[in-house]
Every structure is written in C-alpha cells, then in structure tokens.
Image (cartoon, rainbow, N blue to C red; front, side):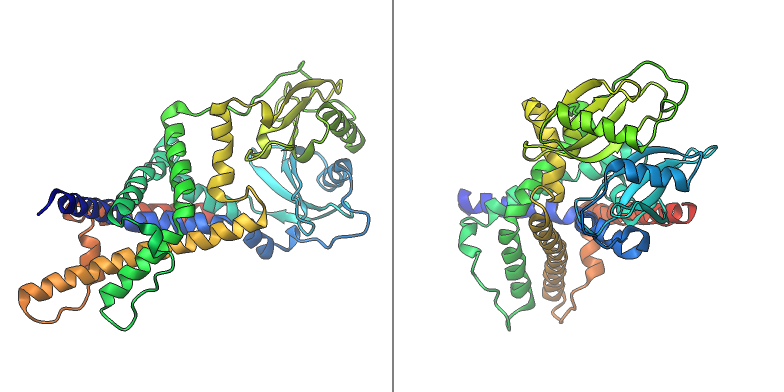
Length: 408
C-alpha cells in the first residue's frame, strides 16, 4: 500500500472515530441549538401575553411601560425592561416580588401601556438554552461537557476534508439512488457535508472559542459600576417620566444609540444600565452600554462596540455567529436549515456505520444480515463507551429539563 493511500485510510479512520464516538451526543446538541434559533418565536406562539397588535404612532416611550407595570404590581420592584425589535411582541418587564427572590416575567403592550399578563420564567427559550449550554449542570462542569465537543467536531471536519479531497467537486454530485443502500447513504452524507461547510466552519470556530472561554481565557466585555448608596433601589419618587429623562441622557451620551434593554438597580448602589446596538458589526447588545446615576442622571460610564480590543471583539462576535442572529431573519433561517442538515448528517453517519457492520457480519457468516442500529451504537468508541456516555448525558439533560419544568 502506498504512503498516500495509507494516509487516506488513516484520515478516513479518524473521521469515523471522531464523528461516531459521540455522534448521538453531537446530534442532541445540534437539534437543541437548531430549535434555539426560533425558541423565542415558539414562546410567542405559546403565550398569548407576549402577543400584541401594532397601533398607529408606534411604540410608546419606555416610561409609559414602566408606569403600567408599576401600577399593576404595587410594591414590586422593576429590575429589567426588554423591548423586542419585532412589532408584534410585548415588552418584557422583569419584576421582583417582596419576599420572593425569584424573577417574575410581566408582559406589557408597548402601544397601549397595558399589562397583558405574567408567564413562567422557565420559558421554552430559557430552558432550551440551559439544556444546550450546560445540560442543567451548574458551574463550569456542565459547560465543559458541552464545549469540549468542539474538539471531536473540529477533528471530524478536518479529517473529513482530508478524506474527501476535491470536496468542491461534490456540490452538485447527486446521490446514487436505486443501488446499494450504503452507497446512497454515503452520497447523501457527503452531499449534506459539503453544503454544510459554510456553517461548519463558523460553528466549529465559535464552539472552540466557548471551550477556550470555559478554560478561563475569555475576554471581559461587560462592566459594572457603583454610585452613591441610596435608601432604596431607586430614589424616592422615581417614575416613568424620570426613566424617560434617563433614556434621553443615555441617547445623548452616544448619538445613534438604539436601546433594546435596560437594567434597573438590584442593589442600592447600582446605576441604570442601558444596552443596545450602534454601528459595530457582530456584537451583542451588551457591548454597547450607558450607565446612568438614577439620582443625578449623570452619566457614569459609556461603552461602544467599536472600542473593543481584538480579544474582546472575538468574544463579542461568538454568540451572534454561533446562533445566527447577526443579520436578522435571513441568517436565522439559514442557521435553522443548516442545523437540521447537521442533525441529518449525524443520522446518516450512524446508518452508514450500521450498514457497514451488517456487511461485515454477512461476510463472516455467509448469510444476509440486517443493518443493526444498536450494533452501530455499541461500536461507537472503545467498547461502545461513546454510545453509553452519549445516552447518559442526554438522559441527564432531559431529566433535569423535566425536573426544572415541574419545579418552576
């Protein structure tokens, strides 16, 4: 066997090992990440309190929403207000009930300043996000178990590219139908893989970055500040009009600032925090912020996405690229389609391995053998450890999802 052929066989072996060992777990992470792309829309369909009908004149000032929530829940504290860019979604007002440390999600019609109701904080989006990021395992251990997948995923992609040289020639090579099942599955697997490369590259890069961040090498992009201590969370008499005045101060401090969320103090020395978008590309809303003293309305600090260091800019770009919301609905739809494709890629890989093992068993026994999915799963990794580990992690995540749902 020539050296070239031996290297090719080795790359194919590496691709199979890294792709199959944790394929079930990879598929689980792929499908949860795919659903996350439109998780907010699923919640919107689920909860009528989130849905509004647009009215002429546009959305009201933030202060009107603040006053409506404060009047509906007297004695409660408002700690955050989020305004969706879509015209048919209510404003989210996060409130604290006296004697209850947990957050409460209150939804206010931004066109009419009317409270529409309360929903559980254990929303589909929040639950799926925790499941996808950490399997409901607290601390860095859970995130490590998810982000470490970036290593076998990247290795499988590199090995696949080295195995299928001249992969660009397969973009328009149609699968062979009507022949052997394994050949058809292999062709489909290859076709999905080459078209998914445009997604594989940013997915692998951002996943590797999350792994690096989990090791403690991330960049700090959000900052907190302190003001003079007050008697309460907010100055006496603070209302919607005062909040609107603070909004004007924040917008004047950074002309062109499009505010999408504001955080109100949770302690007696925190300022008002306004977050949103400006002109920097590929940054989260949190990278553009203005901190305002609620007592004096003086600007405490401002941060712009354009002023981030290279290290911070990489950190800020990870989420928009990973979840595909950097260019609005267009990229979100693309990311959703690619996510489904990656899930199908995993399924095709398992089926290919099942047919390969069936062919080997048939050759040994001399009689036809049906492809066994169980046999394929048990062959993932040394002594099937990959399959058992994948199943264990998936069941743990799903168990915690159900447990937290009933506890919410």
